[in-house]
Length: 214
Length: 348
Image (cartoon, rainbow over all chains, first blue to last red; front, top):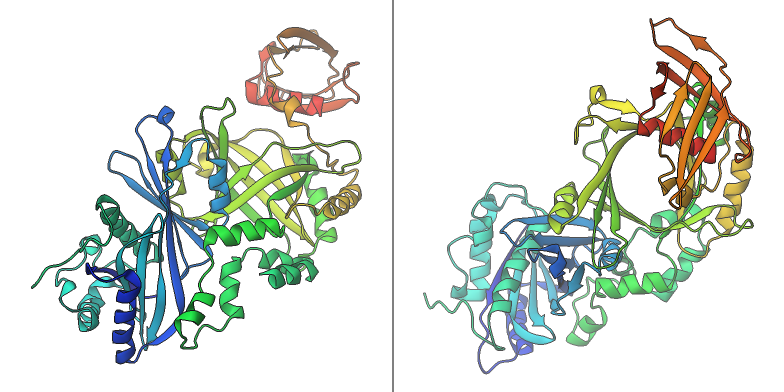
């Protein structure tokens, strides 16, 4: 368990998700990274029934990196979010709640190859919302360290090394108040949620993001 | 995955317990070496199985422990030592002695369009603060006919982070009640035996020892096994074990329906006439039951208050049951908690 950051990679108009993944795969292979299987992060979103008053949103995540856990993040509709990490049977319990929380039928899946390069783990995934590719997400983990503030500079440099200028010099928004906290698997999931929210708001497929030409 | 399910079914009982906790997709990582650099085709083959799919497969293969077999009973405080001694002799953890536990349980419910509210329980260990919280769904108990030795109820037990209390509250759940359980836990193979005392919390959310009060002068005894469905053989083992605990404690299938019906209108003890009078509301019909009190002991060491042991007989009750009350004054109206536990004893 180390520190993980998640970065969007801009989609190009004339390229498919698979082509971009292949392009980035070549780059990380050139660095000496070895592919170690694939990864999958999925998210299902539920909404509370109108009888409960203010609509609450529940996001339920699974991550192949923590296969025995379920991550749930509740947005109470008034700006408060409460996360909970539970055993895999939490999914079974959610089925019991189907009369109060109904699925919004917008399943998000991020899948792609997983690479290892010494102390780093790199994952390159296409984000699918209802089976449409919406963009490319790159996850980089530095395993020997658990405090974001201590390894952000190196992670940034590492990402910039193979992704180029789309990686901002400013730490991701999520970490701005968490620079010195101990990193937990939930922090990875929270970052995924932030990115998924951006993609959901965006309309159309293959829209470019993070295209800052600095 | 098929192979995995087969292995589990053929393994020993203890191993079954450990393995069913592990996500099937996780095991796949051990089975399939994933450290080979591979082409795209191979990568597709090794793709992680979506969590919902592996859960569905686990359900189909009956390896999800979602059924609880249960027997319940109670013993008076004065008899608990004898029972503990007996259990120490019968159960597995002989060397280490019984494991103690001190838990705080909160019961949450949410109302939806259906008339039946959804109830979830959260339990946490007060003595081990870094342990995960347990979130639990318990379904309607099935008593079955006489041939079935135990109660069978659906049960989903999930370990979670402590944020679960806040999480449920924000989801719209409301806390109905909470209590403290303190006692001993024994193991016998796959069976779990708990002997515990239930305490009422005088201050909401404060489980401190000085602000809790025992709800009765007895210990709750539970014998349970959490298992995947269709493992009815274990129920027979439980019946045999329960037999071995007789006559120290009678473990039975407790009919909750009879307990949850509010049985009491008024419950009064008349010390002068040595009569007990209670009105039982049953299907809106008021039934007055008048039994004869036999005072077994009366002591007035502590000034005007009395302590007495009551026993009651009535044609409606099969057996003679007794219950000890302390600190009663003449014509005392007992508070509902005490009445309830007395009535439960009478009806059980």
